[in-house]
Length: 283
Image 1: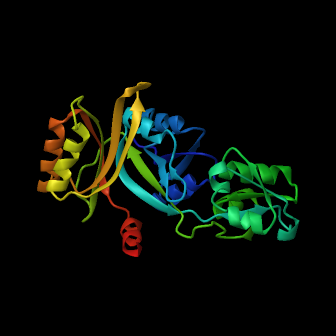
Image 2: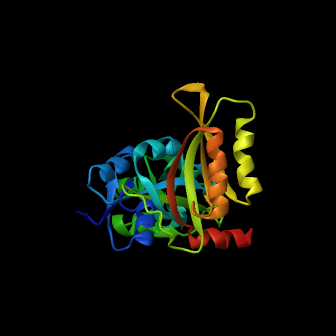
Image 3: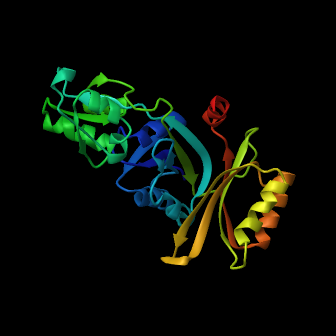
């Protein structure tokens, strides 16, 4: 039984909601208070898919998300790159010159410092982006604006006083689309494989695990480490590589990885987002 819903964290109008509409326009978006609630919505059958942000090109990785992914029981079936366009949203009829404060999530406030400084607008920390737009609409104070996606302005009846005010015009957030059921089918020319592993407690274990990818010509696009179980001696690594596990070079690299790891879990095999290739060509 399917619900035709995709769950996301935040209020309606959040960037995660925008990602849902762009990547799965035929599905109903289900807002959830926390990332844990998003995961539980899928595990409990309230939604078919989860839309989870993992990193932003300006701010870096989303805190705690890599701790949640391996324990979620969900599998990555797709990725979605969303350009983060920030708009200044205010009560209808308010001129830009009257805005004194702008409310948003602390991450978004840090992405448009230049605009706020140039217009002498003081930042105000809100719970999240769309939630800030919702609160600004509820308060109805002309001097208070919100920084959020244009979609939030449409939903909460706010006027867009300025668009694309982010400091960096390539500001992009990467999302992972997750499901209870894995899909390892080769459904695109360019596939990615994500996995987590723990190295065995032997000298130069990490160096040895990486050797297989180098000698087999497998491009690793991400490698991050983080502590697990609350101790400094237990380290888990999250990695993204280009290729499919059935590719001969990827298969050899993963087999070699297995010799030096205490655990290895494939989180997902999925197509690369087209924007990934476009950004690489621009680099």
